View: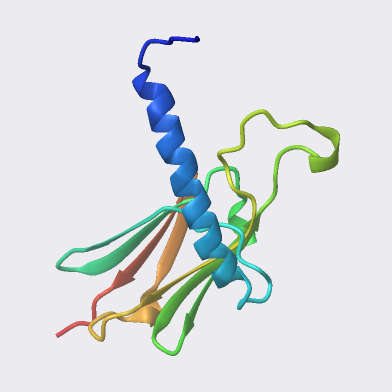
Length: 136
């Protein structure tokens, strides 16, 4: 009989693996209806101030020129593609937490913002978008 002490990190990893399995199934159905297929959803914060709406998207390892921003029917669309820093066919991965490939995020804009004055910047792996509110 093999008796091991309880390890909370092992339990955490079990729960994380189960969550990854559930999300993979969900995102597989989302990817099946999108061309090109979406392979990951970068973490995002959307905040509002008195003056503007701000969107912060975590995109470490990307080049700013590979990120596209558009306004489509009152919706902010951010899309791009992140490539792995290694050749997939030449490595054996032991841990894979980063996601690579195509992404797209869509955010319906409120009516009080002025998308014509949108500005975007990329610094330290965070892509930031600022959309000022319309003047009263």
